[in-house]
Image 1 (cartoon, rainbow, N blue to C red):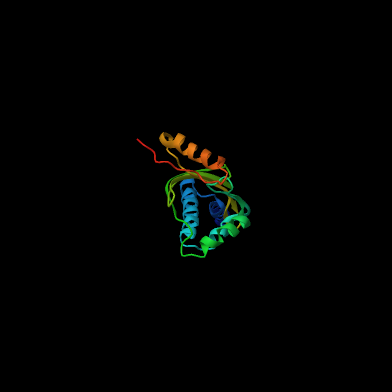
Image 2: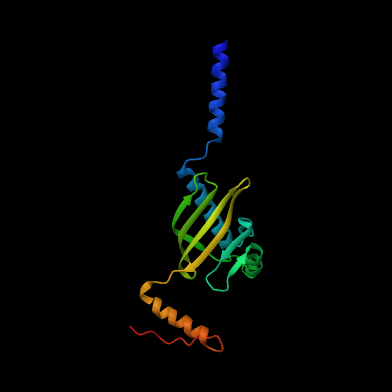
Length: 173
C-alpha cells in the first residue's frame, strides 16, 4: 500500500510539473506568430479587437515622423480607417521571433507586404495573465538602397518648401 501511495504521489507531482511547464520554443513561436498574424488580420478586416491587442500604455510608431502614439491616440487617429471594411492590410513575408529566458518578453522583426509596398516593422510583446500584449511597434517603409538618395532628396525638398509640398520631378535612368 505504501508503494502504491508513493507511486500515486510521484505521478501527481510529475503531471503537475508537466502541466505548468512552459511550451517549447517552437510551439511558443507558433502562438506568437498566430497572435501577430491575427492582429494584422484585425486591421485588414477593420475589427476593433486590433486595439485590444495593444497594451494600455503601448506605443505605435508609424511611417511618418509625426506618427508616435500611445494606444488611445492611435485608436483616435485610426478611427476613420476602422469605419470602413478594411483599415490596412499587412501580410508578413518573413518574421523573426526572439524571447527572454522566462518567455514573458518577446521581440520580433518582420518584412511585410502592404498597400504601401514592402515595409519592415519591429515589435515588443509582453506575456500577461490575460495573454499577449503589444508594448511597442514600429513600422517603416523599406526603401531600397539604390533609390535612397532620390527618396531622401524628395523628403528634404518637401520639408523645406514653404507650402510643405514637394515638387516631384521625373527620375531619369
